[in-house]
Amino acid sequence: MHDESNACRSTASGSSEVGAQLAAWLEELDLAQHLGEAGLPTFERDSDGVARWRDPATGLPMSADQIQALDRMLHQDGDDPAHAVPLALVQLRRQARVRTALLATASHSYASLAEIRGASENATRFDVHKAAERRALLVVPHDGGTLVPAFQLDAAGELRAELGPVLEPLLASTMDAWQVWAWLTQPAGLLGGAVPHEAARDSEEAAIVRHAAVRLAERAAR
Image (cartoon, rainbow, N blue to C red; front, side, top):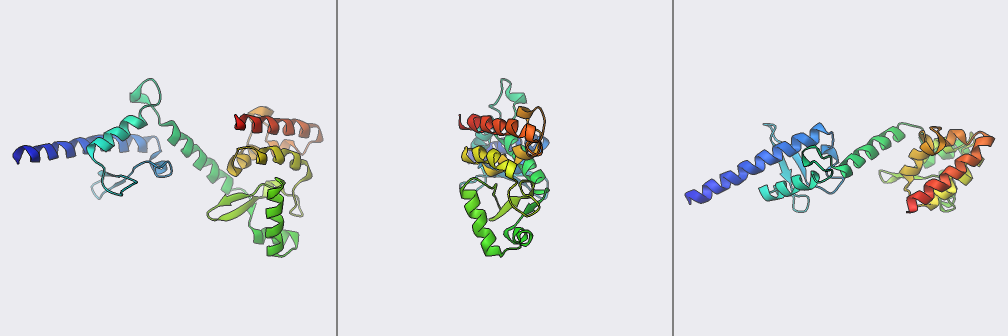
């Protein structure tokens, strides 16, 4: 009985030590908040600041073996485990930051777009769905609703004519709507740092933007 008690304390100590180090490492990298999104175990700090890890499948506290296995997995990228960075979490962090930046820019709901168009909300919803099906409008799902990014619209709330040929290959590709939104509104390497939707306003640059969109769509399919 005495040996069993010592073994339990040893296991708990090992779990606490590895779990504490792992939690601190992820917090230092600003990755802790993305664990759940990646389908990985998450932790919460108790009133004493101790990291308490939980198994996402059961919701139960994780054992020392489970925490050690998670630690090994997250340190497996790179040649030096001591300085490894969990790339999947880094990518999720970047995506979250990009989405936050995109959400800070102008976009429309069905109601606000209907107001600009001078149409009913139901008619606008129907038109938006049909345009999206034709790959003639970028529509982004968010929090159970739908956003129509404003950059692609003219003053009347219709798709800018020069963006139609740019959107079509992107929306036909394996890229998701957030990736398309990000590429069109941020400096693009394929365009020497120009912002695609802005460059497309120039008739001399529009063909180059269309070509870059096709190349990006082809690259995404590989």
